[in-house]
Amino acid sequence: MSSVSRQAEKLGDDVLQDWKQIGRGGFGAVYCARQKDWRFDVAIKMLYTNDSDQLWKEAQAMTRACSPFVLRVYGVYRGIPPGSSRHECEGIVTEYMKRGTLASLLERLAGPPPWPLAFRLAQQLALGMNFLHTLSPPLLHRDLKPSNVLLDDHLDAKLADFGLSRVSNSHLNSSGTTTEDQAGTLVFTPPEAFDLSYKPVRSYDIYSYGIVIWSVFTGKKPYSGAMTSLVHLRVPLGDRPPTDEVDHSQADGLSDLVTLMERCWDRDPDKRPSFGDCLEVTAGVVPPDEGAIRRAVDQVLSKLDSEMVPSCDIAHCHSTMKEDLHKKGPVDGVKLTKPLSIEEKAKFVDNHRANLIQKVSMVMAITERLGEMVHPETYSNIQAKKTNQDKLRVLYSTLQSGGLRVKAAFYDALETHEPDLLADLASRLG
Image (cartoon, rainbow, N blue to C red; front, side, top):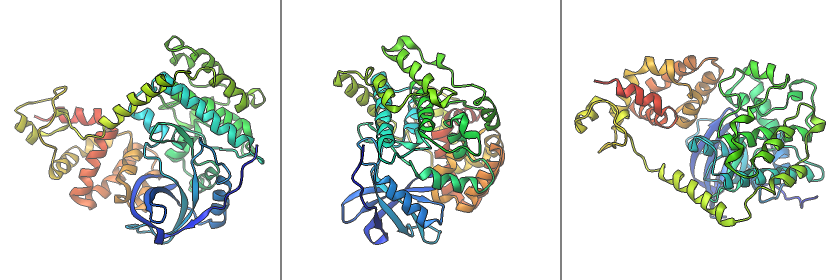
């Protein structure tokens, strides 16, 4: 299969407006902005790299992949984003997918999507990967994982960041430390790739696909809580995510898909199926009834949209709010009559500093949510720390210097990423 090659556009600050940061990671930051001439929003992934030639080369390669199941790349950006303290930087400009990533979907659902949608996601990922692999010459993804799968308004999946993995991972590895981004990639990496002399081939992506669909069907992260050194040790020996966590009786076709994922992550790369073979299986389980898929999508979108309405249960407040409600302790289902003030949130963060440092586990996710409130140098220092406790101690220095606004934003991030911990601490207030 071949594709008509497009030239990547060069975009600057003169055609982009209404910037807002929507994500951040070890690779850099992601922004949304309005392209003034096109009159629609685009995403700009800013990379922490100065290799302009390599970035342009990757953008040109990505424009070859014109498929409904691959994120559309418009070109390369060069400029200074509004509010940025950095000098001129570069990034990749793509279509904007406001429903986020497959990883964020699974996290918000706290489990697998409804089966019709889960089956469609498995099919669309295989379609996208098959397209990349059958181009001439083929494109390898090399970093297939839920956070690199984006979702449109109808929860259709589109592959992202293929090719860019070489740019972003080369930067991440330069520090000599293991970041959470690297650890997230590690669990989707085939055992043969742990050999430093390994050169990626198609079977690399097929292994990753098997692990990804396991995550889709369980709603869980593979090897959750395991140390990276243990993953390095056990995966080459044959350890894989437990397939017994997928209840075959829940839907017709699950048994076939579990068998497929086991074939995909076979220790022997030569025994893994092609994506064409995968499609023979996935096509057989996608419901022929479009209504079933639409109902599943509507169900998920309704849940996602309802969560966008801010609310705070009584377990998340401190004593002054309890006085307003004439209650003490957590009470399920009771909502606050008014939200906490910035001052109240900041006071909570100050009062519970010791407990939060000891117990918060989602430090990097919280740091990323704070966005540009955290200086890039501080962000790198947080990443470099080996324990969550040390990471949060560094972050607290930003909270102290940033004042009430940053502390309140930290509290809001805790509500999203550590709701049970926040409820437990609040329930202890007398």
